[in-house]
Length: 143
Image 1 (cartoon, one colour):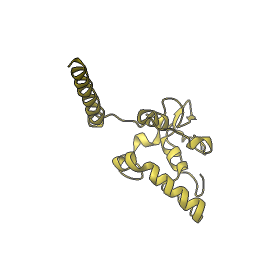
Image 2 (cartoon, rainbow, N blue to C red; image 1 turned 120 degrees about the vertical axis):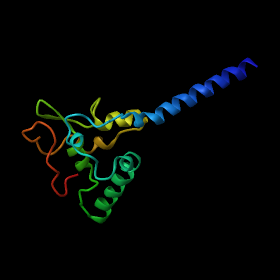
Image 3 (tube, rainbow, N blue to C red; image 1 turned 45 degrees about the vertical axis):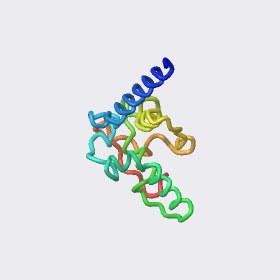
Image 4 (cartoon, helix red, strand yellow; image 1 turned 90 degrees about the horizontal axis):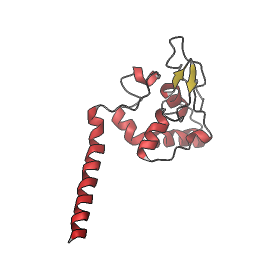
């Protein structure tokens, strides 16, 4: 009897935790890092909800198109993500996978391994504009 009561309480606590986690976006939680070009934009290359759910599929599709088909468009390129989502500290880009930065923060929240930057650069190819934040768009073919 006591075991059933404890189990019931654990279920209720779990359900409340899940409900709070699902409701967090409704309270304006924003994972875009201040000082990045993305912080100035209304949406990414696709609407925010699409990017949150499908960004890995878009990146994987871009990878396949580039590696297997030789198609080097930049709409879903990882270099484009980095150019927009990197923030700057004293004019120097902070890697998007550094602690507290865009990619690392979301991947830690979702408990997902972040291994893109073992091979790919985590900072933009180009220096930030004079304003101190944002970055130029990556050149065609940069990955």
